Image (cartoon, rainbow, N blue to C red):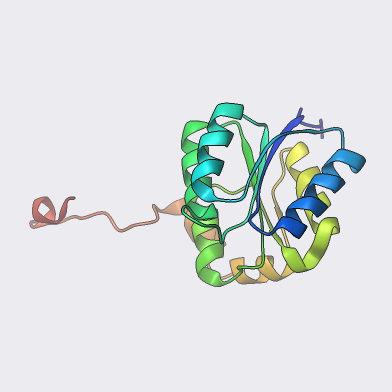
Length: 164
């Protein structure tokens, strides 16, 4: 598989120590350039939309705007940008929303920088990466997501009244 040209990365993390670890890893062990960092969601949206990175690494739990909302907006406004979630907030709901939002990778922070490396390497080859625990959560509903929208469409005689 040919590696995707991912050179510009934007980091979104509100825990200073985790952000520092991620920055050091990217600076010292990858060929990517950090084009921005943010510790709150609102600044992250503005900064990442302006920087137009190839990859965004984002936590879910952030002040102002959460990482799942950022994922959704980035995938609409920067469709070529890869998004890897790096978080401790892992449950069936967050996994489902991330999949519906088009996430490229979902790494549990407990997997550490090795998990983040695996996620980055996967998206560089146009693959998706999910931590093993997350993969187990995906099994019950993963196939469903490609065959239907994330909401139920109104149909029948009273459909006009149900439209938003």
